[in-house]
Length: 104
Image (cartoon, rainbow, N blue to C red; front, side, top):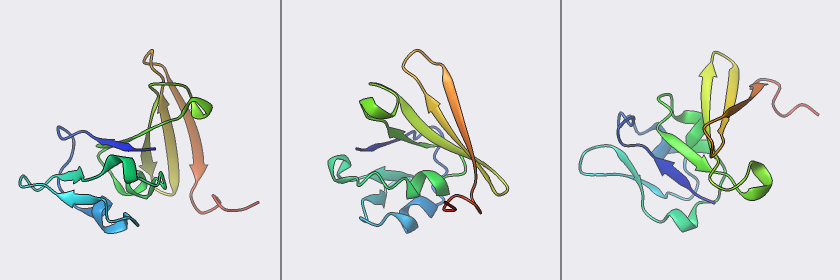
């Protein structure tokens, strides 16, 4: 599991670096975020949830959308839109109220 950081979108705010439990995200000389050891990524998606500019994408395994699929998160207030971008460019969106995300 790993993430990809789009440096064209990254503003360098550092919020993703603050929440990474593995301390894998660091500030590059440019101030933007980079991942030091992608293979060590736990796949917790904490950084995706904090990135307001959609600069971080998560690689999904075959069981989560197929090879080449990526996940990013868009937030509107208390609503999270988990956007899965399939290899053919199609998007599938899962919408979650973050206040109810852990309710069973």
